[in-house]
Image (cartoon, rainbow, N blue to C red; front, side, top):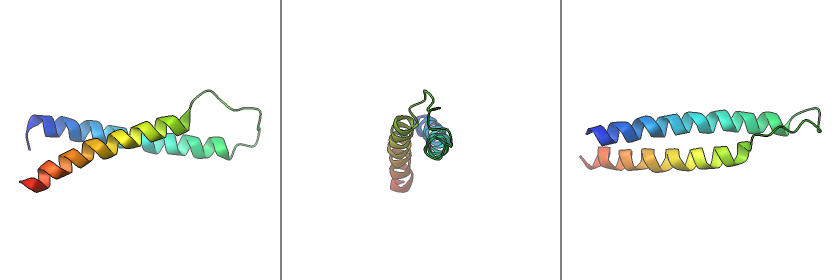
Length: 68
């Protein structure tokens, strides 16, 4: 595993963490009691782009790792 794979694995893991936090934020927004207090954070978009980055980066690292 070279340095670029380590960097991609770290960034992919961070993106996965951001996706989990955004997923929790989106669930909280959907189940809020006060329907008028919407907030300003686009949790769905943050979740989508963070998950896409995590899947792509960790997929490349996994492919290189299993290739040998």
